[in-house]
Image (cartoon, rainbow, N blue to C red; front, side, top):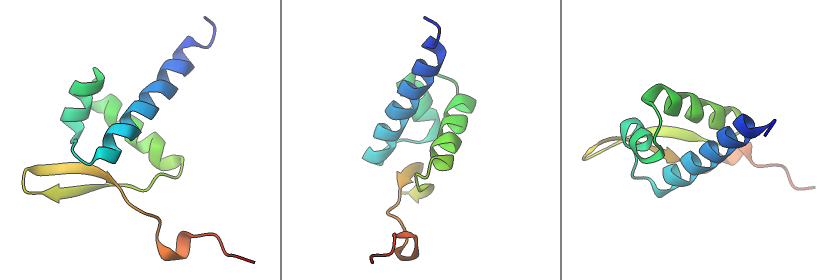
Length: 80
């Protein structure tokens, strides 16, 4: 398929975002769960950030994990 690689990347980005939304995954855990390398997860997270997702690293009692943060109050579109 001509666009198979693009489709695979989009599916991986969707899967990474859904796992991050659970709030329980670090970079190595995401890599293991998705079946890709740690650098690939780092690139995926950066791509999601470039698409406007407010993803940040949060330190918890068991180490670092990713979290999707709500938009800041000043990031909300203005109402007419």
